[in-house]
Length: 218
Image (tube, rainbow, N blue to C red; front, side, top):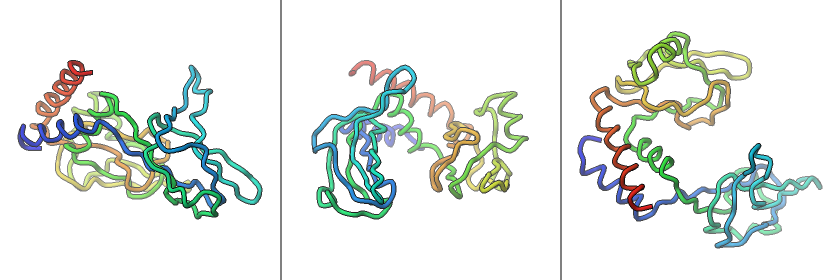
C-alpha cells in the first residue's frame, strides 16, 4: 500500500458494498433440509453467556442422526442452493450465502488484511509464538517486534508433535495477530499480519480515517 489513491479505492469499495458474503457449507455428509428462505434475516449466537443459539439454517441427517446447523453471523440469506433440498450431500458442499453487514471494526480489519503482508497457517493445527518472540511481545508489545525472513516465529502443534515454523516474507513488524494460542487454525488462514516499520504511520492514518468517516456517515 504505497499511496493514498489505493486507499481511496479500497474505502470506496466498502462504502459501496459494506458487506461480507459468508458461504455456508455442509458440515458432514447427510441429507439436507433447509430451515430458512432467501431474503430472510438471520441472527448469530447471542445472550450474556452466548446461551442463545443462532438462527437454524439447515438440518443435516446422517444415519438417522439429525443435526441442526445454526448461523454464526447475523445478516440476510442472499442465496440458497435449493437443488440440495432433501438430497444427500458430501461434506463441504456450499449450501447458501449470508450477506453480513460489516461493523466499523470489521471494515478496519478487512482493510488491514488488504494492506498487511499476511503469513498463513501452513497446516490445520494449533499455534503458539516461539518463546523468544513471545518474550519480546510480552516486554514491548507486538508492534515493537521486528521479524526477518527465515526466523523461527511460531510453534505448530499437531497430533501431539511440536514443529518450528519459520517466517517467509518481507522483514517487518507484527502489526496484527489472528490466532489464539492453542486454538485450532485452518490451513491457509492468516496467523499474523506484518508491515514494514515505515508503513506504521500510514496504517494508523487509515484506521483513524475509517473511524472518522464511518462515524460521520453511520
